[in-house]
Length: 409
Image 1 (spheres, helix red, strand yellow):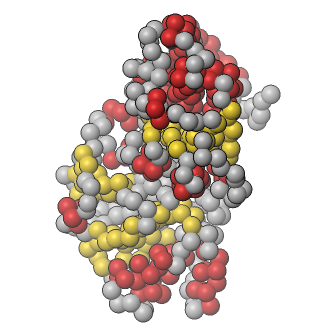
Image 2 (tube, rainbow, N blue to C red):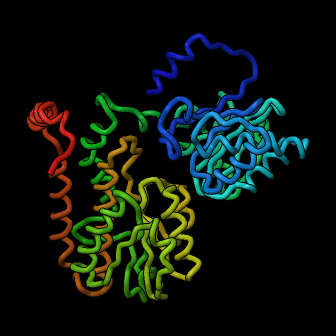
């Protein structure tokens, strides 16, 4: 919990100009212990990193041979030691940082601070999300819009292979600055005890939001993706990871039943390495809650380079997958903070259901007269996700009974 960090730092005070970097993350290498937690440090520099450094073992061995001492089991720690080693050759910190990044293979969003340049944060992005923002309090880095709400009003969504140095004046020099308009209430618990509870209970509301302007007695479909986009499509490949993959499996039934079109569902992590056979009349559909799923993004790039039409189904506008795909359908689930997916899955399912009916209509299998039936069924389905207060109390009692269960069939 962040509260533990606050307690640990409660006696710390600073004044004047300040730089700070921090990171909450799962451990990809080593156990989730304090020694493996970010920031990682060398002699006079600190680093935080999201992603994975695939060639870290080789770099670590080389640095150990040169006398560097490591205290963690992480892949991240090599970055800061390699930077200080490069600083012996390149006296300019940005040059040393650039050479460091160029030696790394994998996916990363990296922030580094160093006593060699106390006025700046060095940053690099490839495959993992990284945003720079500006507000009254200064310049901020984040991996998504959500933590910036209430702090910043201007954002720059960083493209891949970006390496840079940011000081207090640097933000104004960035290209493609956008307004951040989301309000603070968007990221709060609204009286619920946990974000996950909130997300289960707001499914009814967000599903109606997903259907808005897309489902009616007269028409079911997506104006943002016109019918002509689907012309000539003879099969669909749905590509995703985790929960989104399971939404894809359900969508396969819907697409084949309602649209009478063959659908394949593939794991993004395997698709990249499988040397798949891709057909020019194939539509490649990526499903991702965050729009930053690294394997799904790489699979999308592969499909695009093969000349396929690409469609993203995603919850986060301006995310990497949204920017990469030809067309996008936003699920409109709102911010998701709970790790176990609830409303994100439900809204993905709704979008895929609407898509199936839309394609069925475009392909001549569903008439305009059938829209009323589907619209009523969809509306009824969203009503069934609403939890009434009587049921809420029963759920609470049941959850206490099964709280310590280790697994369920």
